Amino acid sequence: MSVKPLPDDHPTWPRHAKTGLLLVNLGTPDATDKTSMRRYLKQFLSDKRVIEIPRLLWWLILNLIILNVRPKKSGAAYDKIWLKDDPDGSPLRKYTRLQAEMLKGEYGAREDLMVDWAMRYGQPSIPDRLEALRQAGCNRFVIVPLYPQYAASTTATVNDEVFKWALDLRWQPAIRTAPPWHDHPLYIKALVKSLKAHFKGRKMPEHLMLSFHGIPQRYFVQGDPYHCHCMKTARLVREELGWEEEKFHVTFQSRFGSEPWLQPYTDETLERLGAEGVKSLAIMAPGFSADCLETLEELAMEGRESFEDRGGGEFEYVPCLNASDPGMAVIRQIAKENLAGWVE
Image 1: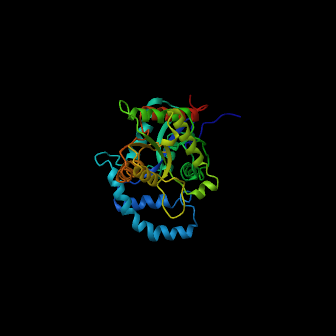
Image 2: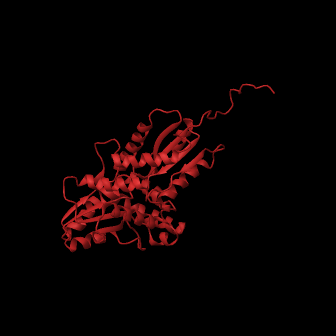
Image 3: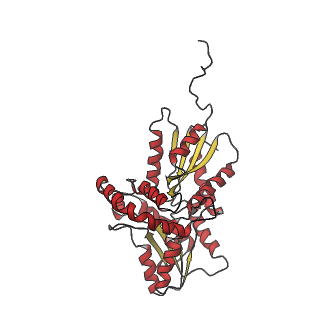
């Protein structure tokens, strides 16, 4: 049989293997005004992975109460941390973009790899960036949710959105999703390096607190490994530092609603330690790959107030790994491990 050239209207397909690596973080509003906040909160709080209660009941609560009250309050909180002279505006957007750009720079110009970034909620969206990579010739994908500890409300919902995008594709690409790295030696060492660098030339604080974002206890009881991952991260950090167990605290923040969340709560623990007269305390947020509202406003501002107003001494918030050298070393290694066999 003779080989004939393809007709002009034949669908195109990648002639060579090309991998798209997508870093994904939680998300951020476009701005701090009420309209932008309402749009962001509606998308975020409509996710059934985030709020696991009967849909009809939650729809009524969300649309009739929360979206009429919370946008203004949340906008005021975001306004405290917004980078008004920076085109990114959102610190989370800035650091996630920098992480992707620095990783891209590490690999240089290659025909077999493209690096991009997206947000689960807000812009740039996961479907938009995946489609852009596909149109650029990528036929294999590595998805890296930037959450060291797995939770259904973070990692799983990123994966949901990725596979939702692929549902309607006639020719689906091969897709890999990075597993959590809560106990990766490089990640643990990066956290320790970050703390030591923050206090370089100064005395270490008396107490150290590791604050993780909370989830309802019900999610943990139903099988979510998040609490176990957080506790292992904390234990490994404490052991690496050689910190006294009595002066090392693991807490959970950002709860809302009336049901119990993972405990002890960060705000209550800060108040207690302040009332006990703790002279110096540092707080880190290992579950966040980049600084955001929950770290810069809730911990660095509100947390300080809770601690100092009860009589606590020196309070220091240690920034997230962000695009620091130790932080980028972790992201590079996670990317390398998950690209193995496709990109060397």
